Image 1 (cartoon, rainbow, N blue to C red):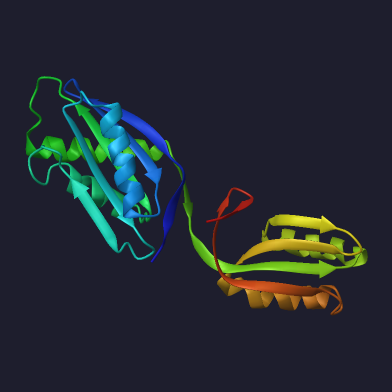
Image 2 (image 1 turned 135 degrees about the vertical axis):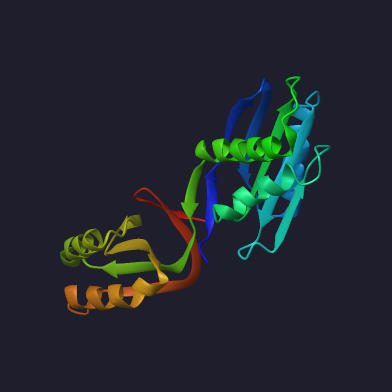
Length: 214
């Protein structure tokens, strides 16, 4: 099951029959964080007609909650949660603030509006795909660093950190299924001179060419 996370939160807005729907999305790591964010939005938009919310927490989406906040049951919170789940997100919360525009939208209209608002909020976010792998710190001499850099470039693996001293220590984040093949290639490229340390079960993602620890 894919795991996508919010790297940078965002806010989007739509208007349906003069009703404003303002969606704010943020990364959270506990139910307490999610509830705190919902509380902040309700405080900020205290005069809104509704502040509906949904969140999903945990690698396996163990915690799922949603609230219609006074809208007809099932027309706001659940559709919002369905968008988060449909996008394969975890550890995310969304609040949609509504200012009523004077025209009733009906059950179907509400479902569409709240779903569309969440999608608009997500469009303003940076979403990354979470991966599990290893953090490798590879040490080699100055003769081997060029070969190592070429090897990493060939495989599209960005360098997370490099330290230059008596030898060069290069740190990379590597997907689980690529670790064995990379280490074998490093061994061959450096004639067995490179040494490394491996930290397993690291959670990370790639933001463009940048490796990000999660």
